[in-house]
Image 1 (cartoon, helix red, strand yellow):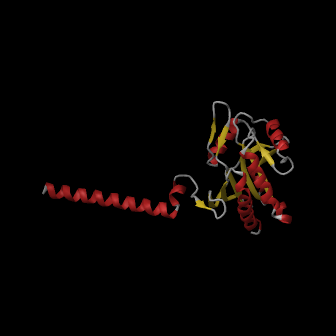
Image 2 (cartoon, helix red, strand yellow; image 1 turned 90 degrees about the horizontal axis):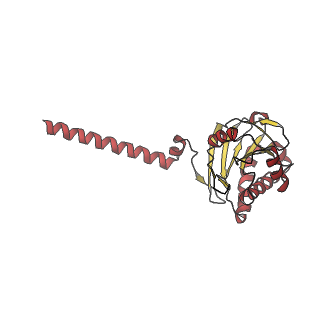
Image 3 (cartoon, one colour; image 1 turned 45 degrees about the vertical axis):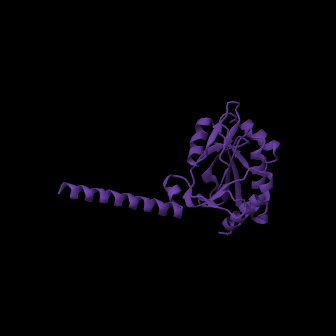
Length: 221
């Protein structure tokens, strides 16, 4: 009798394991597993092949930071506009300038509707956090009049990086690497699209086209 009971127990455990594995397989195939783990599901784009994601209108994490002119802004200040939110290292001289140009050119492609879009950048450097730092970067790369480059103390910025799933690493020499994330936020403050930009000059035309396509759909809503 004991052997029979043990056999039934083994069969029940095996069946449970099979069910769990099947459920995980379904979640992976459907793309739902990353969302359950707190990360957006990844889907390839037609242009650059990087992982981008539709986010479905989840409320964007809020913030209040200072721009390159010393003015304070909250995300809620821009409700009613489509917001393009990027993360830029205020000391970066290679990848971030390319990202900034992609953003500027994508919005320019909207023509008269560009006024319906607000371009924001949040500082991704934990040491160069002053207003002077983000103003200097904006001036050097021709972005001063085209966006608001927001900054704050490292204690203000780090929780935002976490909230937007941004990985930021600082090397021993002070160089910063971070997730090349660009979020598109709708007029009601909901996250609609995550673009993981390709940090190469050759990918810029495809990046501009893809982002402009997404923005065209959003400003038309």
